[in-house]
Length: 229
Ligand code: SAH
Image 1: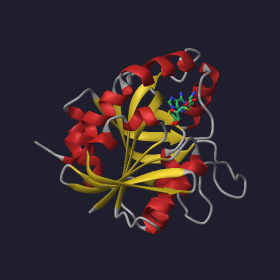
Image 2: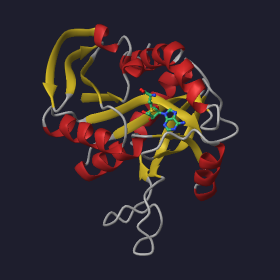
Image 3: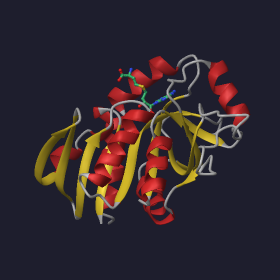
Image 4: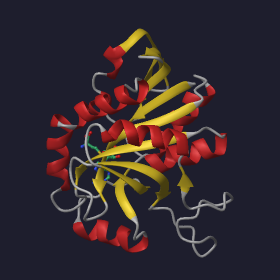
C-alpha cells in the first residue's frame, strides 16, 4: 500500500508531517507533497487547498505522479443532521456533489457519463478508519455531500437536506476526490470531524473549532489508522 493523505487546510494535518520518518518534500502545482514512512505505512501527505477542483487535481496528481494506491481524505465539515454534533466524526459510506445539476439532461446530482450520483467509499478502508476514529469520539457513517460553497446559512443547509434526506455532513472536497478515485480505480475513504452546524453560526464555530480540536483529532485518527494497537 502507498497511502495518499489529503486535507484541505493545514490545521487538518497538524502534526502529521512531524511524524514522518525520513520525510522528503516535493513542490508541484502550488502544493507541497511529503513522502516517507508514517508509522508502518508508506505515505504521501498533501494539502489540497479548498474546493472541488483543487481536491480533484490533488487526488489525480497523487495517483499519477506519486503512485499512491489508496487515498484517505481527512478534514472538518458542517453537520447535515440533527443527530450529528460538533466534535463527532462522520466516516463517509458515499459522497455526492450537492451543487451538481445537469437536469433535465441527466437526473439532479448525477455525474454525466458515469451513471452515478453517489460514489461509494472502499469498504475495508472505511471500516479501518471508523475503528480508528471510534477510539477518539462518537462516529457516524453515511452520506457526505460536497460543493463549492461554505454552508453558513440555515436556509442553505435546509435546501441541501431537502434534496438529500440521509445527509450527515457537508464540506467542499470529498466528492471530488471520490469521483477521481472512481474513475482511476483507486480505493478511497473520507473522514470528517464536525466543526460547525452549517447554519447561521457556522463561520464563527468553524474558526473556533479549527484552531482548537480539529488538529488533535486528525492526528489521533491517522495515528490509530496507520498503527492499530
Ligand atoms: N475561512 C477558511 C475557509 C475554510 S472553507 C479559511 O480561510 O481557511 C471550509 C473548509 O472546511 C472546507 O475545506 C470544507 O471542506 C470544510 N467545511 C467545514 N464546515 C463547512 C461548512 N459548513 N460548509 C462547507 N464546508 C465546510
